[in-house]
Image 1 (cartoon, rainbow, N blue to C red):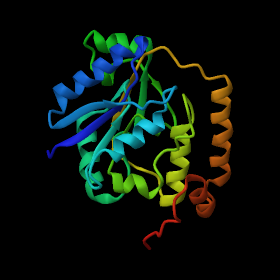
Image 2: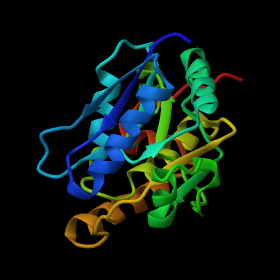
Image 3: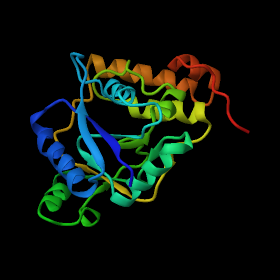
Image 4: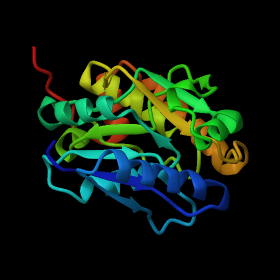
Length: 226
């Protein structure tokens, strides 16, 4: 398969280090055609949306980029299918139909040698993040992800509403699973989290309204093909 780039938003944290190492090793063993690197910003808090946008902006407009969370890995065939389709489709591709949160038990099984597909998991309903395949040109068409979501929470769900509204269809999914490894959960409370939650309400209010969503994310109203 043609080479492509995988970018992992990453700010070192003790509880996440082992997952990050597992994911980078998984790529080295299973997807040798991929160039894998990490990215961060100089924000005082970790801004996942900003990391993803910077990753996209760092490559040529029609080059495929896989945005891969530091604790999550896909299945090989689904990822390669998503990458191949993302090159020319003008759509964002998600290489999974099921998101498996392995938790502490499933992660321990995985590290002990159990195949990922056989590990204990919780099914995350409505998951829309973890691993994306896209190009910069495609990402720009719907405004990318909103960097006003600072710290943890809501940037993925907001992006999904913006994408559906502006593109007129959900991201393309490819049959398969992604697997999220155990780590210490982030704090989902406080002033920053509350600000993210309030901003998310703006996305919910604009969902389905192309003009309102375009204004919210700062893009021109897209021209859809008939």
